[in-house]
Image 1 (cartoon, rainbow, N blue to C red):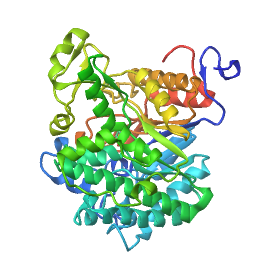
Image 2: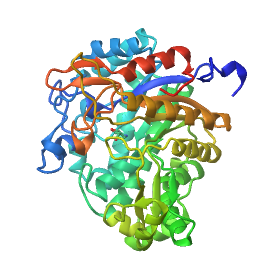
Image 3: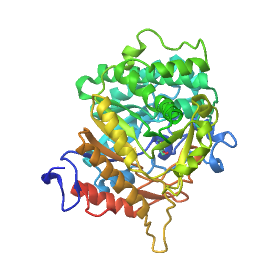
Image 4: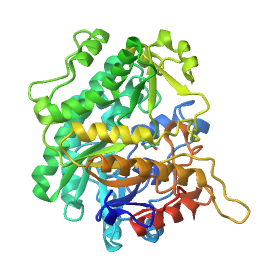
Length: 479
Ligand code: IFM
């Protein structure tokens, strides 16, 4: 770090570094049946018994749809430089393709205008998992037609918001859409079939390509276009060759089957070989796909929460001596297919999700990806779920979240010192929200949401983040 960038004895960030917070449509908007919005696969999934904790749904969520002005003021009060949100496809194109719902577009128009009036940069994610059910009925991500429909929908959104939005993210965490949704069954649409996950994976990348092409042709150079991936810092439990090989396979599934096609126009050979053994004869890749998928991007978004330690399944118990536990193969058939087990460090600090807190994972990941891809990076999500509550004075003293954010920002800054071109950071999340299969049980927000009333309360972390943004850097001592 140069002297000019250091602030007091703290850690400074370069001028123009984008400080943001993120949310996603289904997690915050509510108003599920209003103004012409149709059902998404998450509306349907939530209604299937046993899918979501306590039977929670996104019907009301944070009621952001109705509290838009209040939330915009909250963001301005935090001093946010940018807000990353997603557009709900079923609100805008209710049948997935064809008819456009003007009322749905109007909501996003008001959101984007409200941001710009407050000097906040809008960052639009086009798909954060809420696929219209009409498309799921035609096969969802198993059907190539969904990728084409995504291109059409992108064109509609770009046509409406393109004059006011400069930064576009095609997909959020397609790994979750494909592998949690089609292989592990824990996300909508809840399937458990490895072959389906492979098809979904490829079609999501084809959808990304369609969206890039739509954005380029609608908006030309005005649009900066990227994708957000939840890449992993995958570490072998030991230097035993079996553990190293298992970690390599998991790295292949989490990282290389995205980075290689997107930035080198090919799928990694070891993954092609492994995956072909699951579903011999599966052919979803067509001529020209990889060329389209690897069309140049302007940035890459990375979501990071926690690193993963991996061993060969038969070596999982042997790892106890190395301070590691947990011999569960990575989520059932997925782990078995990759011949890998995920381990945990004994005594590690964890968030309320049970995820280990280890900021060195973020540094490691940014440095690696920074070397491998030719575009600037953004951390488009990072944050912690904590057991937050309002104390008798009404305050939410979430010091663990502050420590988490502070330590991860320091890690990001170290990666920048090592040469990584990191342009911005988005805290997940602006406010507590619907945490998918875990319903409302996990709170990630800088802002506390009292779900029965919808009342918002700034947590201590929100005040801390406002200060960080204001000084463009972190104070000297952590926390
Ligand atoms: O809430 C999710 C978000 O939708 C995608 N990234 C991870 C977050 C925390 O699990």
